[in-house]
Amino acid sequence: MESEHEVTSCDSCGERIRWTITAAGRRQAVNADPNPLGNIAAYRDGVGTLRSRGLTTERPDVETYERRYMPHAATCPAPRTGRSGRAAPRQRSGVRPVRWQGWTR
Image (tube, rainbow, N blue to C red; front, side, top):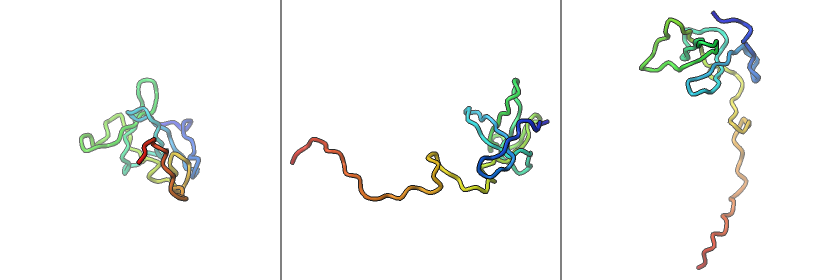
């Protein structure tokens, strides 16, 4: 079902991944090969885009047109970074003074 031309590699660990689009319109990386233990159901929409949805208690099984994948964030051996790109949170160096509010005693 899936072709190899859309498989890329993870920038952090080099593993093979596929990019999907979630229901919220965000990109999500899944491992390139289907996995029966995965909790992501992926399918092709009418224009060929790989769409994904999380398996929930309301819809715990994949449909006939979907395949089960493992999210790459769950299996990536590289350390996760936040939005800032730092591997660890920044250390605080002191207390920031408050701005003058204009009140007097």
